[in-house]
Image (cartoon, rainbow, N blue to C red; front, side):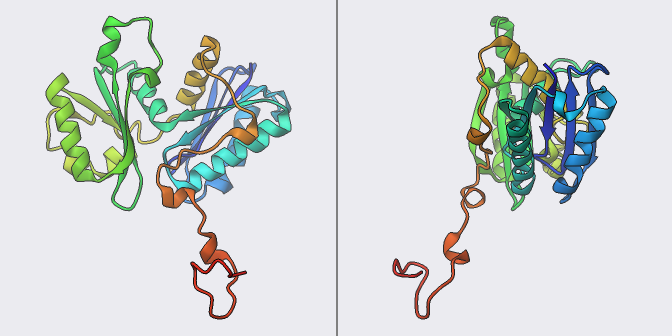
Length: 264
């Protein structure tokens, strides 16, 4: 399989391709608010480096979040359009799973017992989850980070994050914290010796190649189902981001209020 991986959940815009004749390739750009402008050229770059055309791609995977609303919308829409055009299915992967997988895959780092990816959600909040890799010592048959994930489904304030991390570290001794949320709130986190930030800058965003490798492992295992392009949805987490305020956008008749069911 020639698999294209699309990453745009944070300020970073990245693409990786595995299975091409040129071997695994990756391109990463700091996008800021330029996700739409940078993503398509990055796809062309990795295809050229891998020695294949877009038409030779046989699978697509994409980071579905949580993350930035605009970045997720651009990445997921691009993945869906490509998969539909190529006639293939698509695999969505959590940004938190990708960061956790990348953290334990660093050759120069001692394997952490517990990893907490922290993604900056803006508005003074973060998205996060804990990955209990210490559990794998007794369950070697398990390797997918999703199977050892302790979800925090609601956005957290930085203060609540610190309190939660310290509770976790009291159980295992040290917690590795990665992601752009760890970078943004480094001042709050770095004063606590039990919070390990040594990979925070290197893994400020989910690496596209880590996404590609995690998706490949899941597809090879056979336990993960791909989706038809139209069934893929982003994990926005924040309801205000996931819901379009049609009442504000719809034209109003004279004297109608936003809650007036007779408004046209």
